[in-house]
Amino acid sequence: MITREYDGHLLVVTQPHHAELAGQLAAHWGNEGFHEPEPALPMIRAANEHDNGWREWDNRPKIDPKEGLPYTFATISYVEHAKLYWRGMTLAAGEDPYEGLMVNMHGRGLYNQRYRTDLAMKRVPVGREEKVAVNRLVRESERLQKRLMKRLVADSRYKNLVSDNQVWANYCLLEAFDRLSLHLCWNGLTPYEVQHVPTSYGKGEETSVNLTPQGDGSVRLSPYPFKQSQFEVSVTGCLVPMKKYETDEEYREAYYRGERVELRFKLT
Image 1: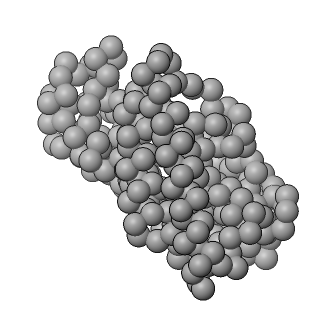
Image 2 (image 1 turned 90 degrees about the vertical axis):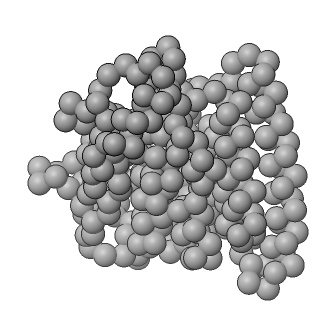
């Protein structure tokens, strides 16, 4: 879950809803300055499903007993975190090998600062149990990636789309979709910079995209990466009372009774 204060309430956005927003961004990506994702549909699905392992957790959320607030992607134990991302990797791999490759790289990248492209990620596993869980996930995901690559090079649809440059650029594209969506869900209309955004499939062809809030409630992106000159995206959230919850059940009742809101963002 992603949480923040919103009009005196706690705004909660589930990981799958955040991912759906990332999928909207992927579906509209591409213009004269930014190459459209290729293969298109597997990349859109990868964005839409990159956090699919969280569905069961977010359907039965738990609270951090120290804080009395729901665990989020930034506070959940790495033991649970690794389980969720392994589930997501295997689900995506079963849908499509290219989608699976991207979701695999996304999940593993969360444990190495997105392959050193996001040095602001400072959290690390603490204690033996967390380190063992992360190391196991990394090993198993590497094995899964090798199996997926074998499937891709033998697949006529994808065998020409798995060069090192293309796979790396597509991974960085997925991370751009993820980071843009995460920022909008977590921080709303505030300034932000997304680095290492590919502009094409040539080696090292990338830029930074800057978000600047406008007075009319929209956000300007520079350089602008989408097909339309401007368009609107949205994400569903839930408002719950801003308080300390004593039990999981108390929080779950507040969550399921909470008001659903549609957060809309105009991108220009």
